[in-house]
Length: 209
Image (tube, rainbow, N blue to C red; front, side, top):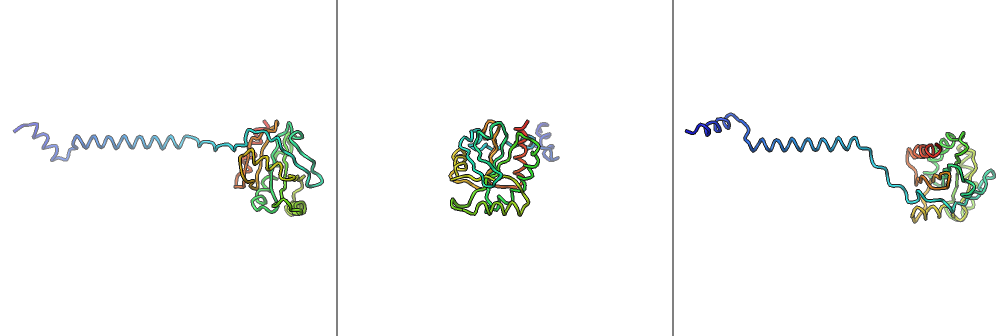
């Protein structure tokens, strides 16, 4: 009897792995290594930045605000030149605006010692003929204990211009826009979510450096 055949038969009887099964095991090991490598790479790679809003990088040329309270003054882009400006469009009728407002007041206070920073509050009516805007805005500010100049947006000119720059069909509230010293939009936040004021603070800080 052939001794080679006996050796093969003996190995099979003893449970030795066949040549084909060894190749399969190697493929499983290789696949496990590849999967582990992909998971590790994914874990150490930072998440990609969200796409910037279309308005970011554009100049806010048609900014035109009027006083709502006596301590405010008319504002255009020319009056704000050389300053880092955070403009918040809100309304006393808007629930998310009322939640966000105290966080923006903390941000304003944080940069109060920086003369090159300016916070601009723009209260907007729910409808074009809301004659009670000043009364409602002042009532909200008094209730919360805030004291600051408040502007209005006549005929929604500024908000409409911002809406066009951002290629939107509607203007959500709240909306906050960050301008650099040349009046170029560097940040745009639409709506409210927890942590949004922290993002604004970091971008303001970067522009002030």
